[in-house]
Amino acid sequence: MGDNSELFKRASEVIPGGVDSPVRAFGSVGGHPYFVARAEGCYVWDVEGRRYVDYVQSWGASILGHADRRVIEAVRSAAGDGTSYGAPTEREVLLAEAIRERVPSCQKVRLVNSGTEATMTAVRLARGATGRDRVIKFAGCYHGHADALLAAGGSGIATLGLPGSAGVPASAVADTVVVPYNVVPDVAEDVACVIVEPVAANMGLVPPAPGFLEGLRDACDQAGALLIFDEVITGFRVGSGGAQAMFGVRPDLSCLGKVIGGGLPLAAFGGRADVMDLLAPDGPVYQAGTLSGNPLATAAGLAVLAALDDGAYRMLAGRAEELGAWLTDVITEAGLAVQVPVVGPLLGVFFSEAPVTDYDSAKAADGDRYARFFHQMLDRGIALPPSPFEALFPSLAHPKDELERTADLAAAAARAIA
Image (tube, rainbow, N blue to C red; front, side, top):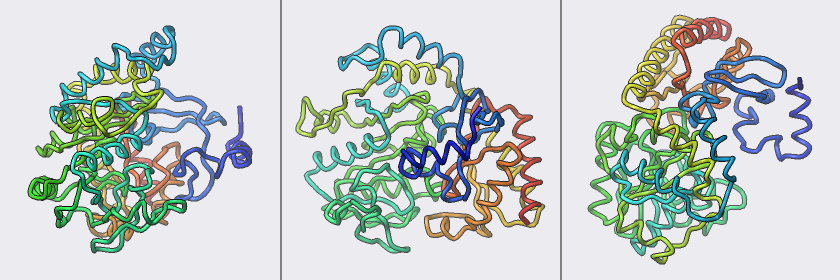
């Protein structure tokens, strides 16, 4: 077996920061990451042989749990026929049809490899469709790492985007306007699109306020702008039709990822047929990808969607609701102020006196206390997201007794840091 600290040291010599995606580095919580050797169901094992109950679940991609047999067999079978062709396959058609069937706003669908590709192209498509440049996004919503969407917002008021990363030129975000979440902004007639996480899950978990999503739909309609729902996290997670079905608001374009890849690199965007038909090769808006619609990923995605029915979603939501209530009780009993928002099968943990409604209130929560709680839980064999700005993802493979054990251990962890 290996050694986590030794592996991280070796990784840091050949990989920037020792990781291939920043949140994995434990920068928000301190210490060094555990390196996963294998996973099954609700568990991961690190290279030292320690087992953890995993609430990261590949950041929500593994809705059935890790190494689900149906997914493994689908991928194994597909791999036997070759791993990539650069040519159309039947499974691409089947997956696009499966998405359209479940998400009626997606009249046509284009498959890509990552959520970043989906959002980046959806914004390009909206600009092409409207002939406008301006984009409105919300502070605390993450839409991948395309330049135009890596804009940092000011506090509480609408701000013209400032680059949210070194290497992003000011010109790339000059047409990005950043506004507070849960407040309907003014949408002027130079706005191409409003892009939003219908349930924000990248500043912790923040549900939409009543009327917020409906207000965005109305404002976009009045201005002739397109409404883009980034459902990379919520799509096929909060229900078969995603957050748009849950809240009854129909966007013009939707971005999907995580669950539809079954743990393999796959994402999609879709929407109104008249808008989607502007994509190349039929239209003037260019997008391409050598590995788009990869045969292994489409096989995994179809296997996952086939396993998700109404009963599965009821079970997921019920487990999240139970775990959320238990965590609230045991942490509060330890004398700590906590908010545990739950939306369907998603939940968050904020060490905060008041409910969190936007990025400012998310940042005001006690991140240091979360970091201490995270490590207390990790020491007890419970793997939470290594950042206070991420959601927890219980899967269908998390049995009720493990949720109860998680709550018991959370009680001890809370007392230890109180």
